[in-house]
Length: 406
Image 1 (cartoon, one colour):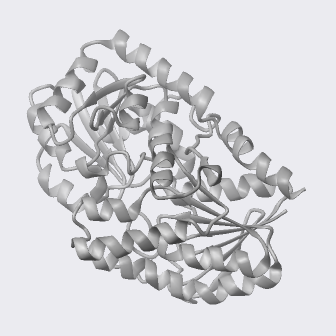
Image 2 (cartoon, one colour):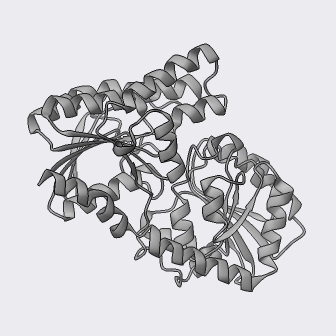
């Protein structure tokens, strides 16, 4: 089967959408399918083009068994509001000639991965031109999030934009998303139920072993084996509500047995560094290579998952499955009744968003109760193994598609 993947982000970052699209493409190629990818050069999460990708602007490369075509993208220094829109629009325009050229390859399936709703019309158009099935996969509802968080404003502007989004969604043969609540949201946006698909983010459980030793990281950061590490690892972006972490560190400054570690890169890093300057109970790590992801996650005794109030049930953080696979409990800031709440409550604690005192209290609760930490960690690993294991998820989602083609 010929499969064309259209995704702004595609590898090699160890977290985020690029990681999932990269793993999925490799998995499909390993099973005998011919996979092509049209993507931007690597730039995420640093919001800076990776070394060696400035020129030539268009290129073709082979990553394993996957044929990758790169098209240029404008990367803003401050990715907010209309700058982010133009950023994605630049890729939609620059990638259009490459996507149109794929019509002559005649793929059987065109899979467009968002965020990048601006690319969705191109994806469905190419599918129709070559008689392929058109599939849109949504990692989050970027338009809803942008309006709810104030990145985009104006009721008069919002109404036509959401109407256009509904029109585009209904053009696809299949529209999938990563949580059941997000699938329900698709139905609210008038996507026929029969065309929707639950397609959760998965985790390669072989890569993250809950028994991994993390002594190298603790030694590197000067953290003793007896100190409880509360780790945030992922993109340091605006949707996570990360500025709660310096507040928590200030509350816990007298607890020498607790260390907050922040690992990653993104637009919020400089603000976090400034806010935690001279705090002895905070350590930073840059984005770590994929091959050390398991070791990094297993350094934690507790995983922290802060989220902005406005993002509830419009996103389900991709980093969560890796946290759970490490066999450590998770503390999330989210509203009760959300899907994030229902999942994390089975393997950790949930506190209200923007409540630093509650988050600090939850960290102390688990710090002082090692048995509960261990029990919740075992629950986390068991959930991943039964619901989010990579091969099981991808087989469940792709087998009906491949069978229908055959």
